[in-house]
Amino acid sequence: MRVVKARILCKKMDINEEKTIDCIVVCVIPQGVSERIITDYLDELEFLAMTAGLRSVRRFTQKLESPNSRTYVGSGKLEEINNYVKENEIKFALFDDELSPAQIRNLEKVMGCEIMDRTHLILDIFATRAKTAYAKTQVELAQYQYLLPRLTGMWTHLERQRGGIGMRGPGESQIETDRRIVLDKIALLKEHLKKIDRQMVIQRRERGKLVRIALVGYTNAGKSTLMNLLSKSEVFAENKLFATLDTTVRKVVIDNVPFLLSDTVGFIRKLPTELVESFKSTLDEVREADILMHVVDISHPCYEDQIKVVNKTLEDIGVKNKPMFIVFNKIDLYTHKEVSEYEIGEIGPEHTSLEQIKEKWANEQNNPCIFISAAQKTNIEKLRANLYRMAAQIHAGKFPFNNFLY
Image (cartoon, rainbow, N blue to C red):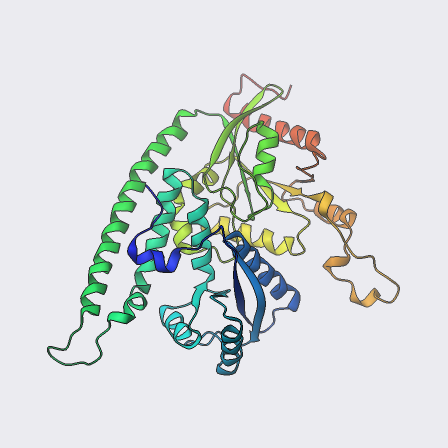
């Protein structure tokens, strides 16, 4: 089933990847959040924009206890943003939080450009990245669920000008018609996904009692590259967010121990709830895995925050107390600042050496870990040995007469 290209979506959900379009990014800074974290948030939002074919030319931030319920930012900041948009003919404004339908309408009236929130942008990226019929169906369902409460703003040109009996314009009837169409489409897609879910359950059942290892992690952490390295397959990998949406399962044999290795969709901060729900079956590979291999981009300045996001997402989808092996990837890209004698009191995460990080995580008793570079194939043989040992232990429990440990 194709990704949504219907009349009611083409205005809101279509970005041409072939042509880069200038945009601005806007973020509200809550109290107690450091500038370093906000910089990372905006870097990620700009990376999302780049993945979708947009180029950020200006950042706007404002410190507020909570976003303005009408316009997200305050009136003064909105005027500043509006002046910049008008003077530079900006066509897109990206907001780091999910906006309400009322906020979108109010912002569009003032700024006169396309308003996109973080959820809208992620859905658009998923739509362009979906390749298989199953992934396209999942993304289409998430798009319709996001669209449903926002239909009103798409028909402002048909809204009635006056109230009263006999003065009802065509806007209301058109909105109701589209709402029924969207609801029917959502019901149809859910039914279609149920059928596919049943097929996938049968497929997983037919795989027998083989040990299952699932790759999880923040998007762009290097899961697909590691998958290709371990399974000698050709899973699509690219230095962009959400390069892989479809779950890929490959049989891997290390020495004489066979197991199934699955590459799943990457997680991200503020992952839209519509996507989590529609990708339920894809995430079932994670739920049913015997071991989770958590891939972390150690070169990212906020890798610890990314670890927390992944752990929280796993908890939200019902994955708890499952054996986890943490793989710190991209050690070849890790850099840190040397500490001078004048900075003793100002040591931060950016001053921590790789050896100090290794020492810290070596003391973590709950989850074993390893530091590798999938791109440079550093420590891969040690990784294989660790996977062999863990898979063999579980395999021995399932097949006690074929104990590979001895």
